[in-house]
Length: 164
Image (cartoon, rainbow, N blue to C red; front, side, top):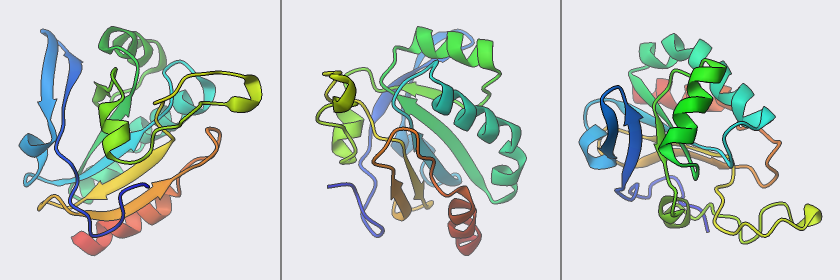
């Protein structure tokens, strides 16, 4: 079951491809500085995931104005994520949940990704969004069951406005 509003966001340490090479990013190091929008997507280089992160990148000023830092998480390796970001113009930080441990901790991992296509890729993250306040508590949660569905980003912004 996915984490719910009022739950404490589980801490994690994931790898991001920074300008100097791979770096570790820990949720607890981000908590307290600003509100967080944590976006999970199934896979890099796919149409819906690319469009979502490009749209978020283009509208980043809206989130910054709401005192929010946005991070994206997928199960892809950090080098693939970096190539995806460069090719597509994605500017938000991308974190690699290569072992799918964070997707499982947040309760959003598919048991079988796209079973109708006979793809056996358990652990892939469902497209999801969590708004985490400065104290580490989840204030908005949305999990999309179908990978082509997008979260309601107006509801995300409304949740952030309530935290301002």
